[in-house]
Length: 212
Image (cartoon, rainbow, N blue to C red; front, top):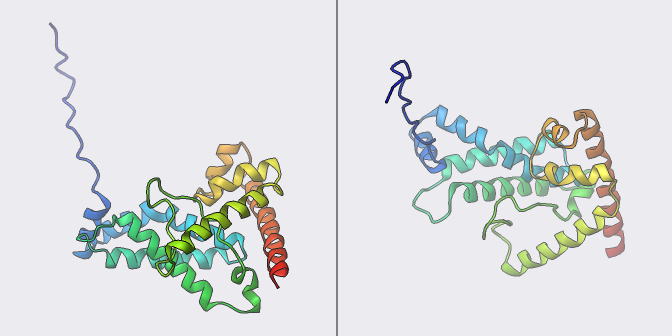
C-alpha cells in the first residue's frame, strides 16, 4: 500500500454558527455577527417588501424599513423563546413594513391602503405563512383565501415572461438572479416587474371600486 506523503490531511471545517448563536454574539457586541445575520436575511427582507412594492410602495423605502425591522429582531431576539430566529425576524420585518404603510396612508398611497398582500410562503412547515401578530386565526384563514383568489386573477393577466418572473421575484431574488434563471437581461426583467406593477395597480383599483 502506497501513501502520498505530499498530500496534506484535510482538517474538517466547523459548521457555520447558527442564527441563534450569531444573535448571542451580536448581543455581546459583535458587529461581525450582526453583519452576517444581515447578509443571511437580506433576501427575506426583500421578499417581505416586494408585495407592498408591487401594490404601489417605494422599493427602496420599503427595503430600508424592512432592514430596520431585521435589526430590531437581532437586538430583541430571546433564545429562551420557542420561536426560531428566522420566525421572529420575519414577524419583526413584516410588522415594521405594515406599520410604515399605515403611517404613510393618504391619497398619495391609495393603492397600498386597498391592497391584498401577495406574500408567498417563505418557509416550509407551520410557519410558512406569518401574518401580523394582531390578526386572529380567522383573519389568517381569510387572508390565505384572498391571496389565492388574487393570485389566480393576476396570473390570468400576465404574459408568459411575467408569469415566470413573478414567483422568484416575490421570493426575494434579485433581477440579476432572475435574469439568469429565465435567460433574459436584468433590464428586461425589471421592465417586466414594472408591467406587473401596473397590472396589480389596475386590479387593486378595480377591486376597491367594486367594494365602494
